[in-house]
Length: 246
Image (cartoon, rainbow, N blue to C red; front, side, top):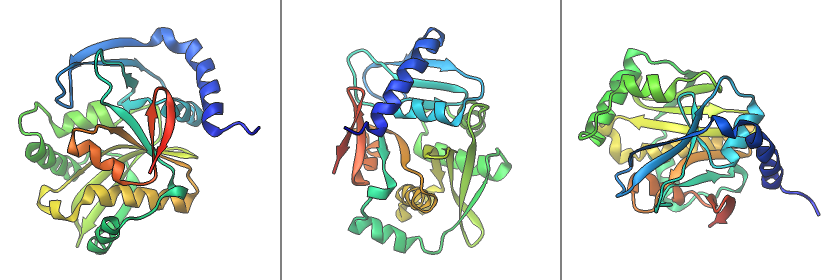
C-alpha cells in the first residue's frame, strides 16, 4: 500500500522532534483572539531552517512568529485549528468568482519583504481601524512577527492605480506556501481583499505546482478566522491528522 505524504511527513517529523524537543518551552499569555482562556504557546526559537524542515513543521500544525515556531496547547480550549488548502483540489464558488471580477483592476507584484514607510503606514491604519483596543504597532509587527532569519519570506503588494491597498506576507518553499499575514486599506473593505489574497495565493500555487497552502488558524467563532473555511475543499489539522472538509 502506498504511503501518503502526511504519513511520510509525520514519520520524519517524529525523528526531528526527538532531537529538538528540549528546546521548546510553554509560554502563557492572554488569548490573542479574545477567547476566555489563557493561551499557551509551545514554542522555540530557531536559526535558519532547511526547506524540508519548515515543511515538516507546517505539516505538523506549527506556525511561525518571527524566528519562533509554535503550536497552541491551551488548557481547556481547542479553538485554534490549523487549516490548509491543496491548490490542485480547489473549486471556486459563486462568491469567489464575484470577488475575482470585482478586483480585476488590482495589480499584484511580488517583492522582497521589507518594512518601508508605505507598508508601515498601511499596516498602521489597518491595525488602528480593525484592532483599536489592542497595543499594536506596525513597526512591532514587522520587527517581531513578519521579519525573520529562518525561512524565505516575501511580500505581495496589491495596488489600484498605483496606490497600495494591501500587502500579503508569505513564507515560500519548493512545495509549500505559508500565509503569515495580510493587511489592507480599510476603505476598500467592500472588495473582500482578504478573500482575494487567498484566491491569488491558490492561483499562484497552481501555476508553480506547489502542493500545499497553509492559511494559519481556523477559529469557528471568530469571523476574521472562520472565513478561511470558505475555500473548498480544505483540510483541518484535528487530533494530529489532516482531515479533508468540503
